[in-house]
Length: 109
Image (cartoon, rainbow, N blue to C red; front, side, top):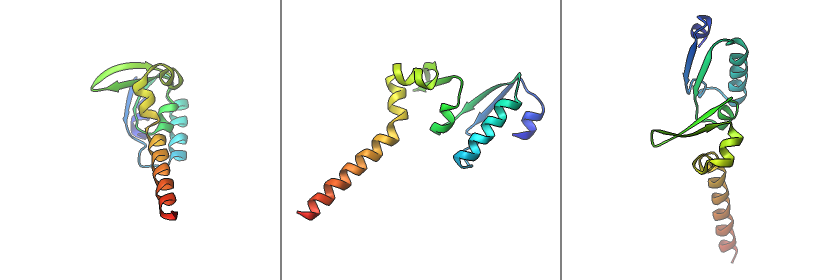
């Protein structure tokens, strides 16, 4: 990444480039990149919510097609597919918790 940045490219594409670091290090890397890449358009392919929410603009792709684009807040408000995607982990955790609570209640009875 450093070699790419030092060349001051007009376009820098990062495909899940920070997935191997913890979220706090990732945020520091992306913040430094934002400040050091004046004049460079940075395209980040990301899966982590922390990365996605840092973006100036998000392009939501579904089935290989661009469905919508905008800020995180804009997409959550108007794009059902994006909303389902960004809340999937939370919904899954809630469902697991409910199942565990039901199983605990049954075992007590």
